[in-house]
Image 1 (spheres, rainbow, N blue to C red):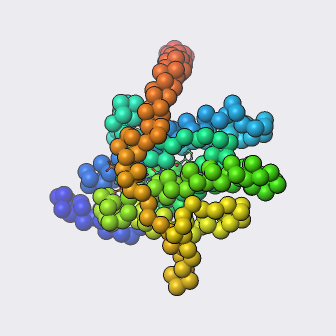
Image 2: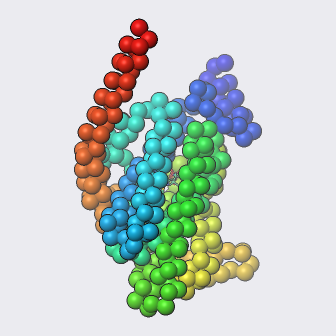
Image 3: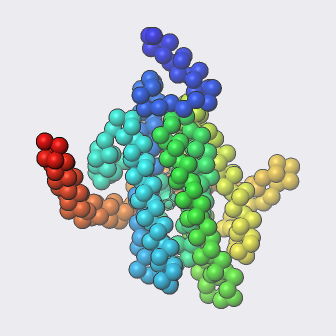
Length: 316
Ligand code: FAQ
């Protein structure tokens, strides 16, 4: 088959809802955009550990601490599944991690905002994991097999994450303590708009959507997923007795959806460019964590070599 025939095969195969596997032929642009998206996703999970990691030592009880440790650990695991999925496309994890550490790679804008109070930990689970799930449930049906399979497992764990966040907020909002409820409201005020930004630019500004939807990498557009998230989340806010910080928010009976105000795209673009409240701190912390983990990587390598030499010795 020449390249034109290969492309026709590929597009037909994807149209029929088949999964592309790592050894299948794929257009270079498909490989490139998948590496881009999966790597950004992996980096987001790993950088996403930082705002919450900061609260492990300050969690209000032993139970909350144990739950938060488990959640943050899951996020590290998600990063690993995703780096592994990216490696099946022919790029090394080291190369991807270096791009992140050198400040050349993108990761989700949301992790450049600070977690100022314990209520922010609730808001991160409820809103950030909530938004991540809406996006990732649709990615379970992405056309690239290894990415799709990683998403299935990640979504199961994210559902637990979302519930733990919501449960933190239920305790703060329905316990009868006005100061705690105020803290929860302030966290919602801080995290609402950045959570909507997680879905990316509007459809008319999104550079990759058209091609990536045609290749079934993305199954829904940025605006469709954002709307789904808003529709799902407003009743949850009402149950908590909190007010979503958007004066233009209103239910539309005719469409069966909530209408909401305009996102501050200037803020979004600034955060993506590196000028958000915590971009510099996040990268510095990530670099420090990577350097502090050097001895662990060296020890693991030394152990693997020792084990291999022993196996060779026994075999000989
Ligand atoms: N932040 O053409 P599009 C999580 C960039 S995981 C920064 O629309 P696309 C778990 C985009 O990369 C959260 N940059 O792009 C957790 C592109 O730049 P490029 C991460 C953004 O790819 C929870 C440019 O703008 N989830 O939270 C953002 O078709 C709690 C043009 O945009 C994923 O990564 C943004 N928000 O659609 C962990 C899901 N949005 O590469 C800890 C997988 C857009 O041309 C605690 N990714 N950009 O330089 C996706 O679904 C897609 O990549 C989108 C963007 C929807 C994010």
